[in-house]
Amino acid sequence: MDPKNGETSRDTRARCRRSQRRGAAQANPAVSLENPDYLCEQRKLPRSLSEYTNVHYLLVARDHWLWIDPEDGIAIAEFEAFAAALCRHENLHSAVTDLLRYEWLPVEGRDFTVKYDRSTANGVSIECEVFYPA
Picture 1 (cartoon, rainbow, N blue to C red):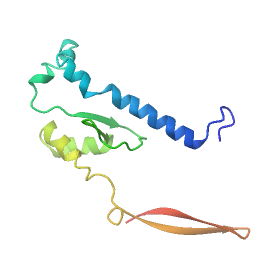
Picture 2 (picture 1 turned 45 degrees about the horizontal axis):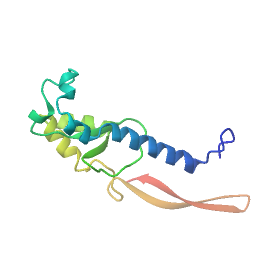
Picture 3 (picture 1 turned 135 degrees about the vertical axis):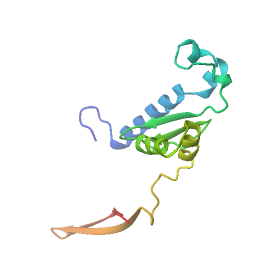
């Protein structure tokens, strides 16, 4: 518990999840569908969103990010995975399509193993999960 504000780590995680959902909500595709010319008018895109064949709403996270299941056409990806996908493909559409397969996520048994390790001090033991590279 944080003695300054009485917030527990559970409260902190919930606050972080709410903050991420707000960030994802700002990239809401409904806003773009209501006004597909907005980004063009702001000179962020050369043409209206309605003129593009493929439109993806992708939140690219750097450093720390809590997993939120993709919904309503919005997906989240790790920055390093996004950058690697861009290097592997010739165009943005094929890179994002590959990224959204989520094959870059670690898989137990392939990328890591989990073992329960026991530590003992002064006659008291604790057992916890430890992640090891495969």
